[in-house]
Image: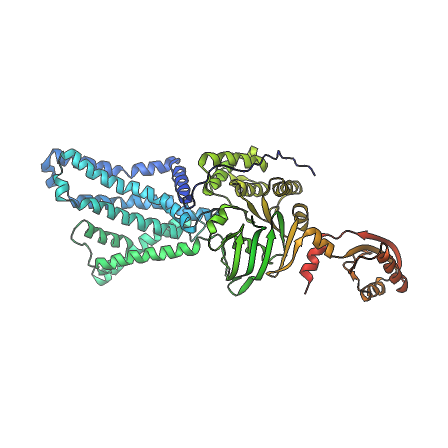
Length: 281
Length: 311
């Protein structure tokens, strides 16, 4: 038996990255792969339509202050913008997040990933970074840009001085949505090998909790049960961040605890599901 | 420099109440080592424990002198793993996939891409490197799994059933690659397989697992030697009395395919021709006529059978 291949294998003598940086490879590759898809770029651009509308709004109010009597530029406006982006958070989360782990599980890729020098947390971190980056791009980035544009159009810092809390509020309210959406979606993605099923599951979790809350509100005649809905919990927390009167009777601390509980459950699911081997009991 | 590539010290691994490995203590010497065993013997479990996928319930595993439990990342940086099941990163062509694996293992992007081209050429996928891995045939998938395991130039390779599903020519080529890696490229490897000819062709040493325990281990040559002196015998007449006579004389009849039986003579090496004379004498006493008597070479299959059948 003679070898038919040119035996060209040679040893590698080059440099190697420090251990612990593999998550950046996962994140970078994932982000580049998604940006190469035209339909996804279209979704990202569409996510900036509200930003453009708000920019015009701010410009008009700055140029014609009387317009502010109808559509004021205040902390509430920025809060509404953050909440409006919820629709695009949902779209991006479903498009990007559903397949992040599900596709790897379908292709048996976890055993490939985890046979390399990376921890499970690095794998999860890399996948979270992919989704998180795009969600930050459609929430935190336009939110902060709007604040900058307000200052630029006004030519002074009067609004900012009077509403300094808006900057951390925009960042924190956006990040709360980013973290809840990405961690929840990643956990759901680890539960199945079907991207489509994960998408439906995520939509179900969001809309089902909202629907249950709607029914319970009608039955009890009170919004004290708003903690049932993930969206309502985020809105409840957002009201506090923007120093707005609460729109629900549910205590904010309960909403915070529910969201934290959701994160803990999701992380626990990820810890159990992201493994190099599937052990069938 | 460690004498052994892999060492297990009193390692036990369980899936729930089922013990996959029971108090296993074994050392894999450097070079090419075959990990043999019937299905369910614990071969894949052992490899996955060495990779850190499955933590042992007790015992210590070390790879290239590093404790797997304490330094899993450093262990995996020196390892290449070719899994038994098909696996790839979805949506990538072969060269992107292999380069990505190189980057995951710490290679800079440019180096990873260069290495990807090289190893794909080495495993015979150079012309298919721009095709999506999902479109590959079974044999090509085996090759790409080897390529991703090699891209970062590991010191030790774990190959789990590398010839599964391959056609005869593909299997021959894969075995050539494995043999070349172990004997010419200086890469230690552990080849887990239930195909004895694969191990016999590529490996120098073997560890035989059975029911989660080590049934035999050592160099293939020495294990074959331990099998005793073997003879192929064909007799005319009823074989039963002859077999009984051989057994009574402390010899062993391994198989009786058609009319040929294999007789193993144990103990110290006899004077040249003494074994043959004893067999002929026993045949005469039991009324059988010897029609064929030839010294035979012990095979790995016999080593395996002996190890697995041992009480």
